[in-house]
Each structure stands twice: as C-alpha cells, then as structure tokens.
Image (tube, rainbow, N blue to C red; front, side, top):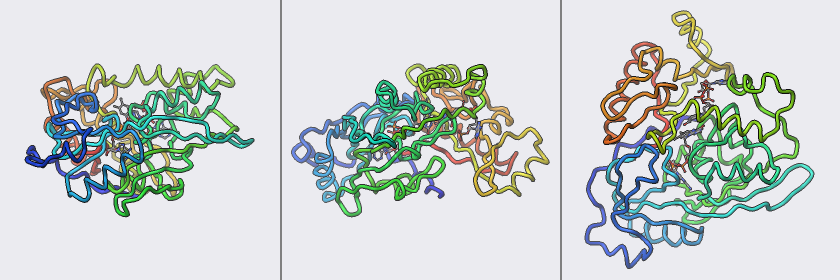
Length: 360
Ligand code: FAD
Ligand code: NAP
C-alpha cells in the first residue's frame, strides 16, 4: 500500500485568535513550547497544546474540536515528524499511561498498553516480565500509540506481527473503535493509520507475545554479534541491539534527527536487474512477490552525501539515511537538503526517494 504524500507545511499564523479556547478546553496550554516533542530539536511552539490522558478525555475533546472546526493534530514523542516553528490550532499530546498483562495462555500472553507509554520502556518491561519477542525493536524512540502508524520495524521484525488489536477514536464516525490487526493493513513502514492521516487517534494497543520464541538474527550486525553464541537469550539480543544502535545512530538528545529520513524504495525485479547492470555494488534485499528493496542509505552514500553538512543540517556520518540538525536550524533547512538529495538520487538511479517522517 502506498501512503499519501506528505501535506505542505502549515502557514505560520494563529488559527484561534479571539476564540475562548480556555473555557472550552480548560487544561489546554497556550503558546506551548514543543522542544521535547520534536527529536529534530527545532524551536517549535504550539498555539495550544493539550495533554490527553484517557480515551474518554480524548473523545470529549474531539467532540469539541470537530464541532468547532478548529485545526488540530496529534503528537506522541515527536520522533518521526518534521515540525514548522509554529503549529496553529490544537496539538494533542498523547500521554495515556498504563500497561498490563490481560491474559495468559499456553500459546501466548495478551498485553494492553496505553498510547502514551514510552516504546523502549515498554520493550524493557516485557523482558523484565519474561515476555520475549520485541527485543529487536529496542531503543526505537517514541510512544506505543505511534508504533502501529508506520508499523515500526528494525532488524527484520515489524511490530504488526505482535499486535492483536488497536483501540482508536475514529474521527469519521466520532466514536471509539477496536480494530483487529487484520484491519490495520500493516505493510512495510505502512498501515491504515498512515494511509488515512487525521482519521484515527490511537488510545491503546493490544499485543500478543507468543510463548514459542526464537531469535531473529539474520541482519548482518546482529548475526555478527552472535556469531559465536549458540542460543542467545532475548535479553542478550536486547543488549546487542542497544549497543549497535548507540554506535550507529545519533542520539536525538545530543544531535537532532528523526531516524531514517527516507524510506527504502521497493522496486520490481525487472527494474532491479536493470539497475544492477549499471551499479553492480547496489545493496538490495529480496521482498515478497519477487520485488526488491533497495538500501536508500547506500544510494545516498553513492551520490557522495554521507557526512555532508549544509549549514545547520547535514547527513549523518555513520548512516547516510539519517539527516541531522546541528542547532539553530528549522524544517525548511532539512527539507531543502532532502530535496537536493532526492534530486541527485533521481538523476543517478531514476528512483524517487520518499520522505519517511510526517511533515506538518
Ligand atoms: P510522533 O513522531 O509523535 O508521530 C508520528 C506520527 O504518528 C504523526 O503523524 C502523529 O500524528 C502520529 N501519531 C502519534 N501518536 C499517535 C496516536 N496515538 N494516534 C494517532 N496518530 C499518532 N522507526 C522505525 O520504524 N524503526 C526504527 O528502528 C526507528 N529508529 C529510530 C531511531 C531514531 C534515533 C529516531 C529519532 C527515530 C526512529 N524511528 C524508527 C522513527 C520513530 O521512532 C517511530 O516512527 C516512532 O514510532 C515515532 O513515535 P512518536 O511517538 O515519536 O511519534
Ligand atoms: P543496517 O542494518 O545497516 O541495514 C541497512 C539497510 O539494509 C536497512 O535499511 C535494512 O532495511 C536493510 N537490510 C539490512 N539487512 C537486511 C536483511 N538481512 N534483510 C532485509 N533488509 C536488510 O541498518 P541500520 O541503519 O543499522 O538500522 C538497523 C535497523 O534499524 C534497520 O532495520 C532499520 O530499518 C532500523 N532503523 C530504522 C529507523 C527509522 O527511522 N525507520 C532508524 C534507524 C534504524 P530495513 O530498514 O527495511 O530494515
């Protein structure tokens, strides 16, 4: 499934001047700084921000916002977004807490987790409770509620594999819905939620972690880490994933970034064979249906961008797929650099790189 292209950046003018937002939404905060909800570290301010701590509060809030026609958007941890300096209208901050084991059976364990729970803390909690399965997804920044949006994945594992159901507020019907995993259309970095922006606001995610566990170590970095170990434990894999990621990826607390800036393109076998004739070292991996996933990081590196700096932003020196912000920059600067990279990759390979983080 292909996602809709990102919307253009919002204009930098207030939308709710003269409207008594405080009397309708008493917990909303005016002119809220969003530095901590924006892993790029841009200087961002929301006209109004409101912390959402329960599904009932979300439903009541959305009734008001939708009836009034106010502009709105949802933020989790802000680690997969490109935010302009000003966000008009209401920004909902998803802070719904809570994680619990609902049911245990011989086959697996059912867990319910609030949308605002920190993803990495949740993965740590599962392992502390002897529930393996999610260790390959350790250290992914952000919230549990955002995990289904792009079906987060790393080291050959996608979160959708372990999701049983997603509870959400459906803005089209203005009611709470529970969607089974089969209704979520999980695909490579994609889902029904990503394909229908502003329709669903996720409040809870249910996971089933099966009792039968086996390590997934086919990515080279992990295979190498355990080349001399017979049966690594889930905890050992968790530690290795954290170590590898800390070595290869920039920590947003130290240097602003949103992880991979571009998606890996998936092309037909014929297009892949054509490219291979021209670029015998092209890095790619087989996909279902004979398609081929091209390593966008390799293509960007091949075009000479790895480690390049353009003023306040640049391409990370250890992974060309990650664009970084050194400070004093903004969304415009990173998008200009992205456009330069997209143009050059298109000129060289005839491939259009799609931006992964969501633009506002
Ligand atoms: P946000 O950035 O706040 O939001 C992302 C999008 O989801 C927005 O459109 C927002 O409106 C929407 N959204 C957020 N919460 C909800 C909700 N409750 N209901 C409805 N919509 C919602 N991603 C991977 O897949 N794999 C990785 O290995 C990975 N590594 C990363 C490493 C780094 C250093 C960084 C900075 C990012 C990485 N990412 C990775 C991207 C990012 O961590 C994930 O996409 C994560 O799920 C984003 O969570 P968030 O809470 O920060 O979402
Ligand atoms: P890596 O392991 O160096 O791999 C480079 C690229 O090749 C990745 O994009 C990966 O695709 C692909 N790849 C490598 N081995 C593969 C295999 N055996 N089968 C299929 N595809 C393979 O990547 P990295 O930068 O160190 O990141 C490690 C993992 O963390 C990757 O899975 C990556 O997706 C994930 N990550 C994601 C983000 C994000 O923001 N989305 C940010 C950082 C890291 P995939 O990307 O499809 O896995």
